Image 1 (cartoon, rainbow, N blue to C red):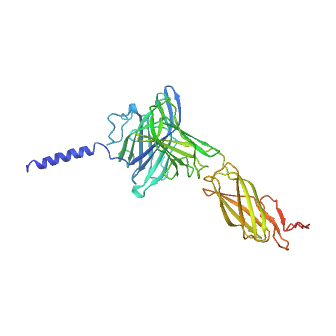
Image 2 (cartoon, one colour; image 1 turned 90 degrees about the vertical axis):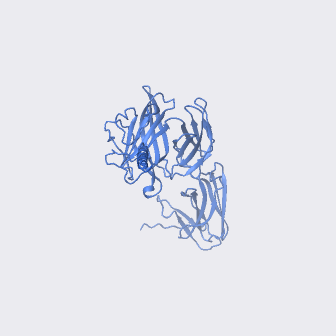
Image 3 (cartoon, rainbow, N blue to C red; image 1 turned 45 degrees about the vertical axis):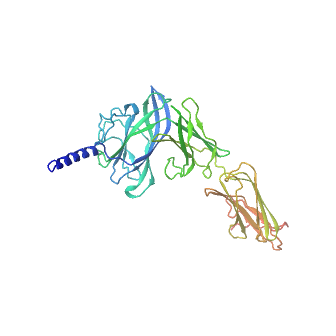
Length: 430
């Protein structure tokens, strides 16, 4: 026993080391999504243009992130072990390769060649965008979106096309060593198909999901693109999250959601993210909001002096979108406008397409000529102002005059006097 134990331990160590080195260490890659931009049939192939995104933790030494893409039929079997970068021969059946240079910088770029095998077929793409997800320091997770990837996939675009992507990173200046890998990421390019529509009045959206193959169950989420950068990133606010929905098999129709409101983001573009049960990726679609910005439409704003210290203001709206309410503002003499009250929107969630009536009583109005205006405020903070309403003086024998607007944006002014008697005006150009 004493003689054989060291030999047995040594033998076990060799086996353990061999097992550990059968595959490169795993990259921290998650939340893979694909956005289908366009498809067309040409010469027996499907020409597909897609965006592919994923979340990744990159250590400070990462110089390159490389993506190899195959059709499912041509994916290597057995899969590559990534103890070294794939060779030209190993990539001979791939659709192509993408290389992201300087992934740890704020603005990574797409490389033009795959350095370990410079004659490898490179995929064309329009660019790469990096956005922050979470974490700090070496634990920072960023989202990478490679946009406008052109794929030539054998077969018709009307059939479900699956690709398989290997993602790996290198700390080497020449991309000739593998630091980590995330292989065998299966992604359907065009299954499910996801579209959406925004209805202008009343401002709502619908989501449509159809299958190119078998029936499916799925969930979907809707996000507002805020700020509007055309990228589904971690900061985009969630508008809606569905329960499980049923998607019929190809030829059997599709799932269409009921119209949903999306206040306070009714003027924003939307993202839809669909995750099919059992899939390790999600499909996204971008819904562009082409509706005109519809501010609150005032059809009337007037005021009546009730007594020397009380003024009744009334106004109506024909339509309201994303309206929080109205700040009532007052100005007397040469002072500035001040907010004296707030009237909340009567519309459901700040939206309405029917006539709504409002009123506000200023119980501490000056007895002199006074000006009023409404500062309408959207739910998302934007503001607009109504016309001015002038109220004559109450119980005052002194003559007063208001000149407005002052300053004038177009050279035109209005004069308001505290009584209706004839006046003589003298205009002097200084």
